Image (tube, rainbow, N blue to C red; front, side):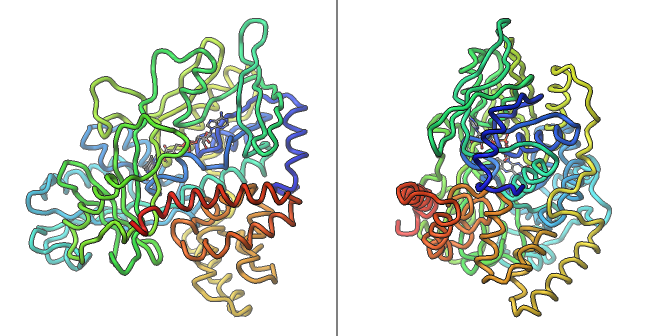
Length: 537
Ligand code: FAD
């Protein structure tokens, strides 16, 4: 049965009628990672997500799979060691989505980093994170650094360090994990919100009451163990469970802005000093360059964090003082996004200094909450949380096997195998007169599943949409435009044109009423307006 909205009534009936070993609340990368791990171990597992998979922090990151070079400064050696090593695991699990990206760290006059410090930090990073030999750091003199990125201001440039990070698409990585979990037997539903907990006569959690946000109907779900993997919302659920004491979250906001590539035509990704002790990334991606991020304490609405003028101006100022370009203005920003880091509060520490470590907290009622961490370390976090759930359930299950599991679309043995597969798809595409860059886009989005899109004789646009409808649980218009394809942020004009067309297909395909379609369109346009708010500023 396809992972499609078409089967939603059946899935809802299933989730309400059978008991689960494990129920996960939250369909970000942490929750989906747990669902896959648990399903592979043989647990009966269900996951519910109140909006779309990855609609929280997991689609709003810097989109890097990295060990966190900057954590060396805080002497978080163990964090760099573990996330660094996980980087290699995530890469092998989904080569189509985790792409090596050379990163240049410029050394400038008056900057916070000197040549020796950069050299030592990158050397330590190579060692701790277990970086492959061919990707070891290389120090550059001024001439070499200027050649690596000609837009850097040569009047202040002193040299640089080249090292490797991995670029990803956070929302796509999450959806590939969700698809894999579904394939392995987990039941995952988006647009289902947990509104209350159920307890047995010993006041131990044994399930939840959840609301279908599309229909307003509530279902009761039974489970031996319930895990709260709701990222920035973790404390809200702990509050509902009357167990919000001891450790708490500290949310910090980080924003990104997207600029047309021709206004900041970087030859390669750069990780640079902002002058106030922070570091930010400027990363070319297709016809755009994106820049981020900020790190400020956040106490407002968790559901819709936005990039405000002050955030955007901060990033523009940093870029304008680093690169030799016509200064960028607010109107140059094509789109933006903002995300919330679910960090564990530490007394007296500034947002940037709070550890990115993950933490598992168990309440007296048995609710297991997991928060903190990084996209990069999701698999390890999931492994730890599932270990805890297995222990609590008292059941006998297999060991964790996600380390060597190839995610949906990512079944490649090596880089050479990936290249061979891409070449094969390009050849099929050429026979069908499809442009090479379209095939490459599909390949780096859907990996081996590109084959399914290529088998479809409809127009490329229709074939892609159909694949997402049939296999990626697109339930709302914005699921497709924002999280399955990233078109809203990186292909704004096309997404404007597509809204009506895909709304009509969804109306027909899923027999959705006109009233709901209008509501979906309004909600999508609202999200769109938030993303493009600076265009006419
Ligand atoms: P989320 O993705 O937020 O998922 C939680 C989900 O729970 C949400 O989808 C939400 O809708 C759902 N939910 C909430 N309440 C309920 C309810 N009642 N019922 C059902 N569902 C509910 N990490 C990296 O490794 N690399 C990076 O480059 C990087 N950059 C970052 C940049 C920024 C600006 C930020 C903010 C973070 C960055 N991170 C990065 C960290 C990383 O993005 C997060 O650690 C990770 O995405 C957290 O995932 P999560 O699943 O725990 O939370």
